[in-house]
Length: 553
Image (cartoon, rainbow, N blue to C red; front, side, top):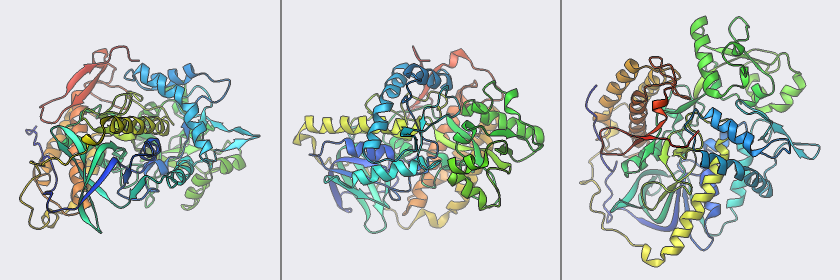
């Protein structure tokens, strides 16, 4: 393997006399559920600026289909939800985090209802679904299979009532600005104004995941790991980067977007069958189609290899057609575009990159290892998900940690007073200003496509030491000539971020010589108790720190 190349601290030059400045009390980077929930939690006496690289309706939260897990049924218990989360997490969940988040879930769901979210109901009571890994029906959902869209509609409407909030759409965050190890805001860019330094007394990262590092992904185009990369360059600790969750059932049709088929379809009774129509999940797990996602994804991969076929199939033909179409209208409409009847035809599916479990390490209030910087949602590693996320715990995490981060950041600002707000001298932005644009010398689309294909082949559902080492050599080579470039537009910065995050993911996957949760090593196929540990990464160090998990489950 080639020696690691460490990229620059900042991707662009931004001498403070050359760019405009903006000031805010709390800067939130990301406009999904975690970011907007944070904005709603900030004390109204403080100014809040939300920066999002698309608009508020383009986040991964908007795409969420399944729902939000919470104990709202009298027949269910908090201990049941906790136990299900711990079992799915493969021994790396933090008990205290899981207990706290699960017990907060009913209040967060009630809060959404109070804000106008219209969850599906029957006979005056919430209609609860069940998904893989859950022992009870506890998933609240909306519009059948479009929960994220409805939740975001209500939350966006709520944020529009905030007098202290400004939203900057179509604005790309290039880097966090630090001084003396403390986060002071960010350097951002948009087509209208170019680069701007946004000075902030506290900053909250809520930029989402990194599914776009893979050729097959359920994530929107913006999910390219930008928040993890900017935190990494700013000196934040990143943790558990080997754990990318692959959703088992992604629609696999030539020419079609890789759309997720919600886990609730299996919860409603759908079977997974091979090319010959044979149901196969019972041979892999007694929970069959309702096993956790890592088990189902691995089983599908085995069956595709065994049958020499590019997909497996979801079969709902044994269920009532009217019920299927009524419960999953969005999925039925999507399948119909390709001449498929969700209720009667076999639907081709295969795994796709879905949810980044690792990320920026945070404490119970969303604080990172960088003073002044908080984080919430998929960009983080909070201890809730362990080595494999339980279905429908993601929107819940965004709600809980978004609220906590917003409250904690505001409390720090109010406690610090006016003396906390000053402009540092900024002695270390890279100078001089680059002439031209590095994109002119490189085919960025080709590098991005090559990276996505490489990650899918070598860092996908099944991994091996030899394959990972080959991937790392290739990514290190790309880093050597892409990271030093100064680009003038988001396409280049996004590629640099993807390379930084991909390299960390590959290095982490090489280090963890066992199989645990979503991380399957074909050359180390068993769980190894010696690896009941977090792998934590710090910029400037040659390898990870291995932190044994004491008391976790």
